[in-house]
Image (cartoon, rainbow, N blue to C red; front, side, top):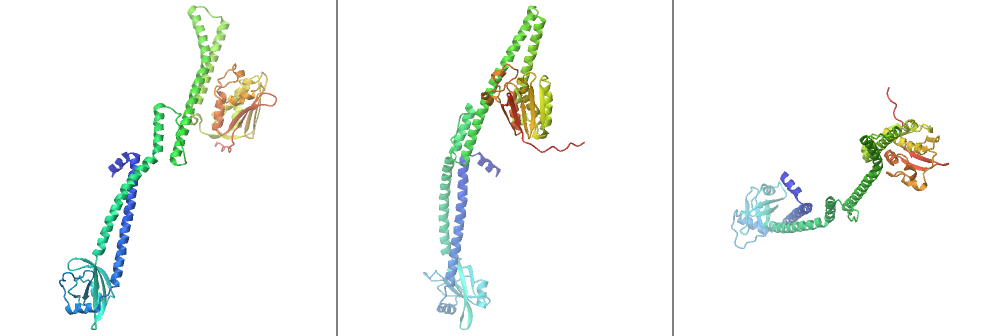
Amino acid sequence: MTGLVHRFRSLPLRSRLALLVAVAVAAAVAAVSVAAWLLTRTQLNDELNTSLKNTRAPEQVVRNALVDCIDNPVPREGSATFAYTQVVLHDGSRCVSQYDLPVRVKAVDVGVANGSLEYALHDSVTSTGQPVRVHTTYTTVGGNRVAVSVSRPLDEISTSLNRLALLLAGLAGVGVLGAGAAGLWVARAGLKPVDRLTEAVEHVARTEDLAVRIPADGDDEIARLSRSFNSMTAALASSRDRQARLIADAGHELRTPLTSLRTNIELLARSERTGRAIPPADRLALMASVKAQMAELAALIGDLQELSRPDAAQSGPLTVVPLHEIAETAVKRVRLRGPELVFAADLDPWYVRAEPAGVERALVNVMDNAVKFSPAGGTVDVRLKDGELTVRDHGPGIPADELPHVFERFWRSPSARALPGSGLGLSIVARTVQQAGGEIRLEPAEGGGTVAVIRLPGAGEPPPERV
């Protein structure tokens, strides 16, 4: 059995479909044929029984049989075979006319002769072994009760049934062959879309051409599979384009600090090689520039690593955290980077479901931008009201035509290109906020400056910690 299953699974899909269709049709035809044969047999038997019940032996035939009372006669040539008549006595003996064949007497026939049964209907055989159907009733002859059996050969039924069985078998064979051919044709026609999909997948695997699209007409499973394949290839193409653009942008951003760093290191190396010392003030400025460029490279690489990780790996487990406390911590950290600025914080309690470290990093990035663009002695306003966190600076602001690009990777406004940064901070912020189910936007503030608006959905307060 296991070998048959293995061989079946090794067949091509269209062959399996054709075989399954043929087997299903064969089973259906066999069931219908058997049912038809059984119903026909039952109907013929009922008609034979009815015919026997309606047949009465003439009284003269009964009297002749009693007068002759031959137990085992030899019928003359040409004697009738449509029905056989015999008389059964109460002791089980039989009387048969010379034109009939004797039929084996059974107990039910004797019961009719004795008066214990009204009639009997059963199968029996003649003395020559011919199967017959027997109907036995009683009658009175000369004041004595005798049983009269009228028999008809079963050959007239079996012959018809055999012919019907042969006819049904032939029709079943033709039906199975036709079903196999039809199943193969249906399998080929139905699997054409699958063939197209297979060819497309093989083409993509061979050429890495993600521009391939499969026609998807209708709403059946094949059309849905084709649309899913088209969506997958479109997503892969988009992902590959973003990856290529990220690599190109990263290379462009890395080139500037690397070039500057190499130039400064070459100056230091030339000074050591030629023995001409660099003035102490210039050497200190050079070393400070090297350190700043190394810090810029480290920050850029860290941002790239942050963006390269998938969403599931980038975020830790989401828990209910106090956004107001995280914002307060972020304000304390950023205040150290802009000691000449004034931070005005007004934070109402608000709990969100997020990853604490990611949210804090996002808020620090937003506040760093506010510090970067704030004038000396300026004020950074941080407010948290009804789940909406706003960070406002009083700097020059962002032109309206540049606002749609602020969350793009490596995008930096012309006014910010002279300032330190990689152009990835706000991209990371947008990603973190979206993972927490929130949204972020930048818009011009009234009276000048820019305001960053972050809205995160609220969550229930966490349970009190056990002491």
